[in-house]
Image (cartoon, rainbow, N blue to C red; front, side, top):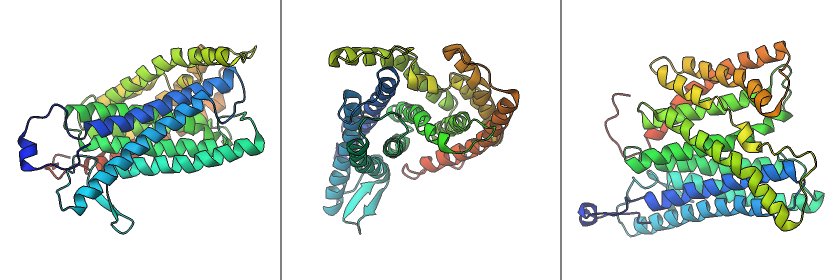
Length: 366
């Protein structure tokens, strides 16, 4: 995890691009957390309430710990280099910022991912207290769980920032797509917290899914600033969705057998997290690519309409659900168009902001 270079080192041949190893560890940790999450959701659905110390929970915590420790290591190495007067390479995690009165010098990407991991630990203690007070968890969207999900999301945002710095390198391009795709898949569970809001005629979960999906797709497209950016993120999400569609029920059944617990009689085996991810996401990514020359709110609104219009069809196809009442459907699609337009503008702005994490260069074409 080298955090500084000299003129000699810069000119020497490298087998591994600088910054690749710690960045890969951070995004790898977020993927482990995502595996734990999809497993845990399926466990709640097919087996029932659980305790704090289960294998899916350990995956969640291990993934966050891996990302946090990698972030901490980079911050400490960067601080040591800075204290010794050595030049800190801004290609590793972005420009360094002072922390605690400049006691530490932290690359901004690793600072954000590390803060998310630290918050996860705090919410993890709350979750353990919650289990001790109330016993088994019956739902995925309990207060400490929402805090945990938001914390991991912060770590995933940090991962996107880390790779955005190296967007002009091949590994940085792949990393942005992988980190943004992981963030998008994870955000579909965080959206469940919107069920507590009074939605009236509007399905708040569908609208929330549309908002985050469009925003992250736009962010990926504008970070990479090239054709196919949004589609790359959409493909990553589709791959995760396909893998987890098989993995979630399989891992739950195997773990239930190993622990001597039966599956619920009414367990249908429908994957929980993969089914929350819009199957229409590739269509949205294509629309974003085709309409990219227009003001961001136009393809954003189109994306919001596609997701909210197709969400009931996905539930009918997978779960055999009934089509919603027409007035609720129309109201949800209209809300999806409005928030999709907002998401398009925010995603574009966030993408352009992330581009400024990299060392200064001529971006006048933007």
